[in-house]
Image 1: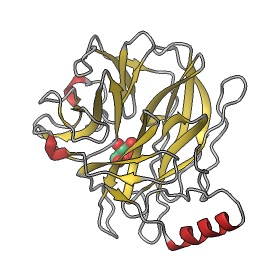
Image 2 (image 1 turned 90 degrees about the horizontal axis):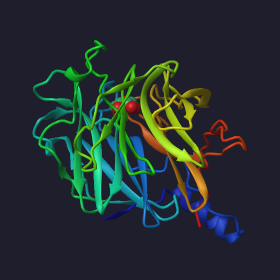
Image 3 (image 1 turned 180 degrees about the vertical axis):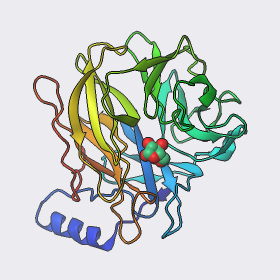
Amino acid sequence: MHLLKTRPSRAAAVSFALLFGIAALADNPVITHKFTADPAALVYQDTVYLYTGHDECPDRQNRYVMHEWLCFSSTDMVHWTEHPVPLRVSDFQWAQDDAWASQVIHRDGKFYWYVAVTHKTIPGKAIGVAVSDSPTGPFKDARGSALITNDMTTDVSISWDDIDPTVFIDEDGQAYLFWGNTKCRWVKLKPNMIELDGPIHTIDTLPHFTEAPWIHKHGDWYYLSYAYQFPEKTAYAMSKSITGPWEFKGILNELAGNCNTNHQAIIEYKGKHYFIYHTGGIQPNGGSFRRSVCIDYLYYNPDGTLKRVLMTTEGVQPAQ
Ligand code: FUB
């Protein structure tokens, strides 16, 4: 385990805060020693696990160079501990490269990590699933083959439409996989979490859907947030049912600073709501292919709609 070092400016701020009784803040981006992208978060036994892609594109080049996913944990949303790399593209024998967006969820004592990668033999992107007994891994390929491949969604001609998995388990125990680029799709999963259980559906009521769906629930409402247009903002829709219909509610987050993608995770932790995203905020050299995870608060209106996120450099205060 690697305890993240605080930057000098942050250490000074913390001393100042302690001296004058002001609560310390997280600072955005929250991870600064590596470029991190496409955050997903899981709350398990009072700890938040943050899973990210790892942007390794050399300076002055503009392409995704992503071979592995990373895992960090925190009990206050401010101090993050890095764990040994728990999953790489090379852990999936059938995958070529490109550790794109992913999400980990927990079921019955096991942790399932859904990932987007490029398939070695079936042209295009694909979705795989890895499994572990621990939220920090190590994870291993749960199937030995992809769960979703590009030839299963032939109504979209691009090769990268099967990316960005997000999984949600409803109160009745039924699990759903959502994903997509240009079209948002969903399918039921079997209780074993590694097989499809029925046909693939498409959601047609999400204007300017680009990618990065994330499902969460608050009260009676289901929320489907997603990357909107390109360059990407985050927008969202709400529904009383996980299977829709989804009603578009508008923009949730503006263009992320210095970055053409915008990829969110939404969690509740210790009574507060968090919007976790990435920007190209680390300078020099941060940008669309060298991104960094940030965290700000998320607020609900009394009718369940979401207030627009205020992206900050100060970040959040320690959760208690
Ligand atoms: O990180 C590669 C891709 O960029 C992700 O899969 C998308 O969501 C976008 O963030």
